[in-house]
Amino acid sequence: MSNIKKLSVDGLMLYRVSIEGIESVKIEDIEEMKDFLKTSEIKKIEPVSLIDLLENENEIPVRTLLTGATFLEKVRQGVITNDNGFVTDVIVDGYLTNLRFCFSGYQDLFGFLIDENFFEALMEDRNVLINWCEV
Image (cartoon, rainbow, N blue to C red; front, side, top):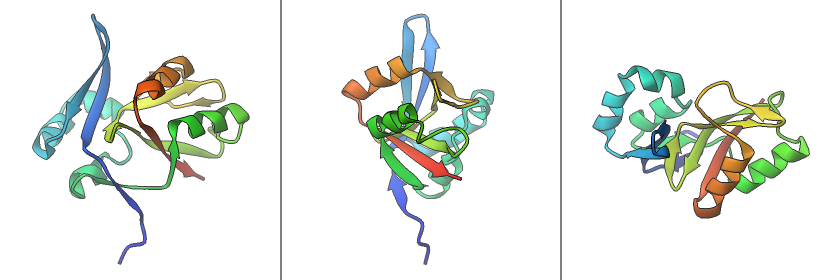
């Protein structure tokens, strides 16, 4: 029996920029997710847990689950940096997303990069969880 904690998610929520601004697209059906995986777009933004999501009936492994506010506070305090770990997943309203961060003190290299201001605005009306993997 495995001791790995799992988090159930409702599907994928992918962020992108269009003429109308930033929008999100939800994909809840497993077959749609598998089809989407075949596109070149997903290869640029593939979350670490995407394969787990597809293989384990919408469950992803949990490392250290933080609220968005806690994550941002720890980044600002210098507790979380690129030197001591990485974000495996950003979950918004129960959906695994392609969001990643471009903050002062912490920067991801791939994904739909957002700054601190966008992140704070997102947290105002969304439930945001960060799956953090300390190294």
